[in-house]
Length: 491
Image 1 (spheres, helix red, strand yellow):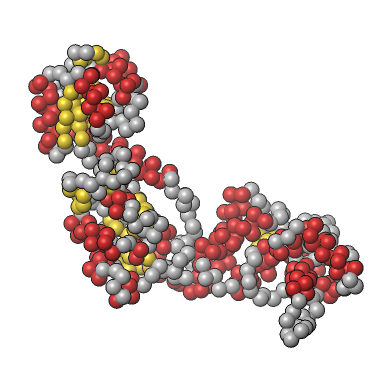
Image 2 (tube, one colour):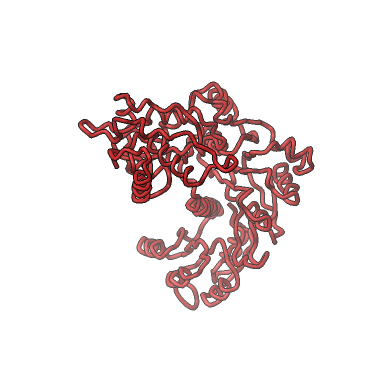
């Protein structure tokens, strides 16, 4: 990240001239002040990236001026300059917030080193600030699995990652496209540099250009300070353009120029900024189809689609379903402090029977919810998954099935009655032209939930989304009405 605006606070003309020559060689804009009062006026008018501050000035001590500069909303990096340096003075300045300390006479190479350090520091601060606001701090698990489809994808990543080639990752929502992008980054030569993500679908069309390229102060209403864009923050690193198909048509031409020329201007600015960035793009839409419809530029598509990678949906990797489910179970049990002993056989059957249109993300969220609702020390039952699938239910009269669905705690009493046939719902009887009454539907849902949870009222209430008190009241009503509801159903 370049240093653009420099303020030299120095009363010696020859020192000012030497510093100006050095900074102009780096294409910086240079301003001068010979006193603390002039420096105060300069920082009140505009913001600076770097300030070269002499310690001894005609109207005061530069060291004491550091306290005033600390109050600025946008504080420059401050390098103290002196011809009478001491260790105590250097320590005092650094403690007061100075970035560096240099003695007169200095050489151009010393200033070059300071500038390099300052540029690296500014980029690290900006990147860390951006990443600290990223809610996706943990991995989604998209690269977990040993199916043939995932093995082929890993092999392709290993070949592509070490290069600087632009990669386009396609696949359905929730298949782990961002995980593939992060894996490309981790295995690349740029892994020690920034990895910056921009979600093209989540940013307003009016602001996306500013997000990409940054803006100058006063470029538009609300632009009170200069801001670096994602391309600038990712310099020497990797930039992930998530859901690139959502980029507005007006911005696609500007993005194409950056990919071709590796340069751009900030919004409201005229200075050309050069960057060295590797681009990785993702899309859940068929970009070739978008090109045919005129929704996406053909030349931009060719620029992005240098190396295509496709993330397979879960239905193409059924071998990974249970492995992923147990992976998430372990992670979320640790995260939430809940300790289920594993997935029950019926839970495994439900996971394998469901189609998972939301792919890995849906599976992850389903397991997390089930872990939160589970009971410690017990197998996680299928009822907590909340999946709309018909899967084989265990024979509740069998002791093995009872042990699986109910409890793993030695000596615990069974939570279902011996006469489980009483819980089996009777076939629905349509009345009045084939319409089933709502109260009858409700009754059958309750009895079915009790059957599926082995007669456990608490689990049945949770699965139905009602309170245990409501469930007890309903069972009491059915009993009073003469329905076959056993009194021995445990809560």
